[in-house]
Length: 345
Ligand code: F6P
Image 1 (tube, rainbow, N blue to C red):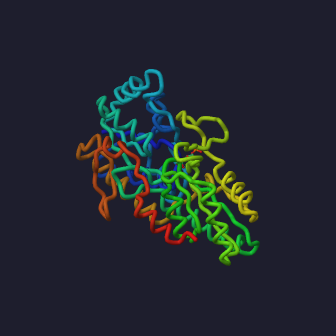
Image 2 (cartoon, rainbow, N blue to C red):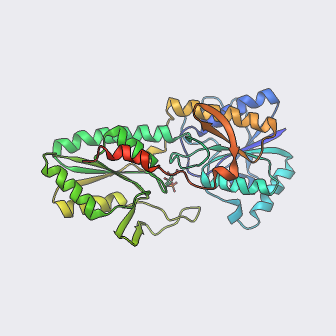
Image 3 (spheres, rainbow, N blue to C red):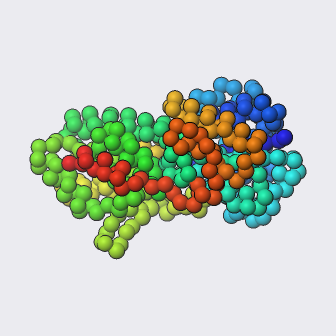
């Protein structure tokens, strides 16, 4: 049987580990693995190449994806669905393994309703996909952000400054919360809790008046500003849209830093981690998780478990419905965030 594999959405450390695992497990079933280029676009435009032992060797530790990626959604492209199904028919593709986050797997769930035999693998550094305890890529991003916060600590302390560290997290604050706890942040701002800038500045001021000489503030890029109880502002600086038509975020760190300095008089600097969190080599945890997902996804294809996604529940890999996994984003629960709040101040 021919199995097509695609990687969609923002890239993520561990994508190559999944691709390698799928290819290696496929040997057991005699599957031929077709690599579709640039996410769903590969199926729409019939752009692919055959994966081989050579092309999938030496990639376990490499960031990015040998397949390329895009945020193209077949349901937003003219006759996209029809084109995907045509490619599948033309090459007699028996199954598709889609590796992606909410966008890519949301499209996979809809594709399944239209008859595509699809299996999902959950990826995103944001960790915001439902149905699974963890997505691969998250651990690597948290490790990078934590190391950055550690480094910011010593320079903030040396100069008696406030440093604001902006991390990724469009809809949720998993990276900010985890890296903030691990790095000992004094304030963590997340999309789940719109920030009142005046309250936050007062908090920093009180902290410094009680003898602290520096502060570290971690802010997720999707954090909203609470202007008043009814007015919540989603910050967009560039005015540009990404490939999926979503506003390009960025600028919250700068705004928070300016407001802290203006309201407290304490010198405040900002450091935006951006794509550094997403690029480069995956952590050992993510390599193992990605490998387990890849092997399991191949087994799901062999069992004919379509319309489902490989997921981690506790320590076990299992499968969950794609429609259920993509129904709602997984936000940081309040009781988890409360753990971080113990250390604010
Ligand atoms: O991978 C998810 C994510 O990290 C979001 O947190 C962020 O908004 C987005 O990617 C940015 O991706 P890009 O710069 O590729 O549009």
